[in-house]
Image (cartoon, rainbow, N blue to C red; front, side):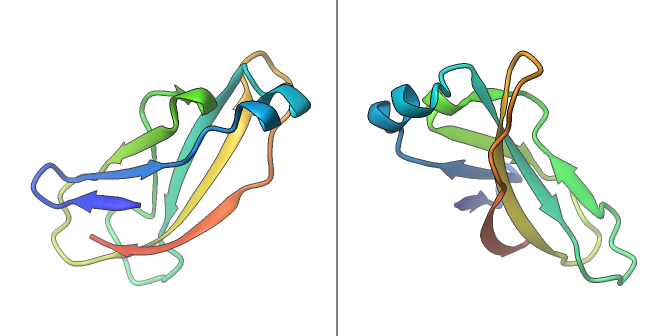
Length: 99
């Protein structure tokens, strides 16, 4: 997980595993990255998520972070959803990030 302060982008990468893709038939899954501000402190953007869907196979997803007037801490979650109204994976909590 990497936050580029200059570009205001949070990027998450993962290693693609062809064996697991074949075993669980996840070739058509898309990735979703969600940032949630759990603190109820009047943060400007309590929920952020990716604008475009990247496939699980791509090994990366990013979220554009709007400029904040004050620092905010977000919980970061990643999960995958089948492209054509099918299954989904459990979400994975990746930790916290400050923006």
